[in-house]
Image 1 (cartoon, rainbow, N blue to C red):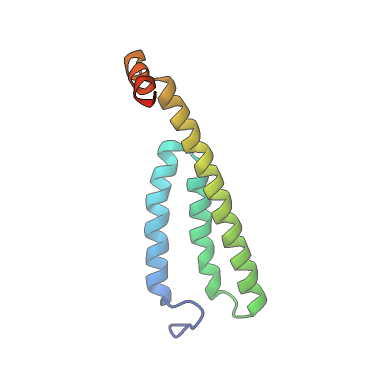
Image 2 (cartoon, helix red, strand yellow):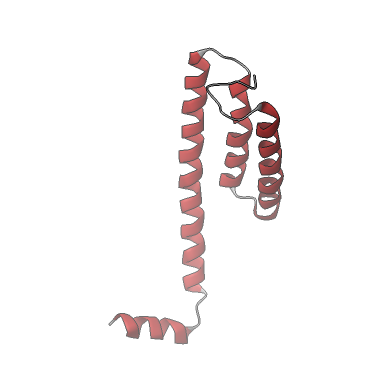
Length: 105
């Protein structure tokens, strides 16, 4: 498996990156409990399926799954940061809001 043409990383290095990513994203998920962080963990772990089966249909299924998870995570990330931006603008002091309105006029 070290001469894999479909995935350029050798298995031990790939496992190392996956473990590191799962640890770091797991810490983020435990702190904030956001869906996109969990989706990223699932997507990264599922990249290990490249080594399970060498037949093309499985690679296509894996690719579709990875694209779907990526799009879903991006959509959720956009929603979360849009909500955070809305909350931040609501919590602005009145003086800053007035300055923002004056500078835009």
